[in-house]
Picture (cartoon, rainbow, N blue to C red):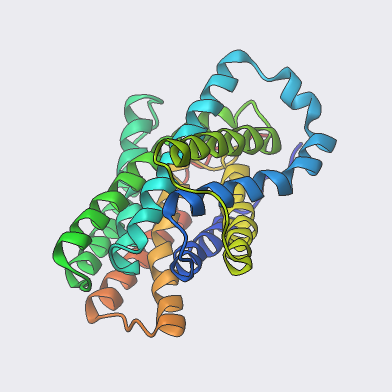
Length: 294
């Protein structure tokens, strides 16, 4: 029997994905380019391990699962393209808060499409987290009004796209290994992002060594240790639980922004963050519908 990992392991993925906004803010490259190289380096890092261990899984994947993987890769590419663009147009708090609204869309999709039971505990966890998110959003300021509005919309779109990616991952990971799944999804996202660069006349070269180091850092820390952890856990844990846990991301990102960029969190962030963390903790501890395979 395969031993299921601890559900608290999801917080490891949350921490590393929270580094994204901090690293992206350091880059001067266009958002499409950042997204493209992040996923390209991720695929290159995974290439040898996947070819060594997952070759048979890739050969035996069904047509239906492959199509779903392609669709998931498209959602992931759109998520990165929209959310990364938002980071330099609004505050880090706004961007990470709004993109973390994905549980709304994940829960709705799982309820209507997968008929996943919507328990009172799920409702309480989501409600507490969203109340905290709204409080933080109310207190977030900075930047020009028009720029922030566009940035906020892009971040919210990122939440919709990542919800599609999480829901599909929850379906496919029941029958496809983590290595095979992420390799196909990440490869598709590279192709989609390259196409976006080409149709928008965004140059993918040249960029400074510093930029390429930042792209590599995003691949290693945020994609491999962040998103890949999520995809590994999707076989054992509900996509709703994973998406709710990502609401911790604004808290980690705000703390890092305080240390690195001297962005002092407001009282709204402190109060809202406490509520979010409480909601996430309540959901992880009390939810009894975790899907374990073995």
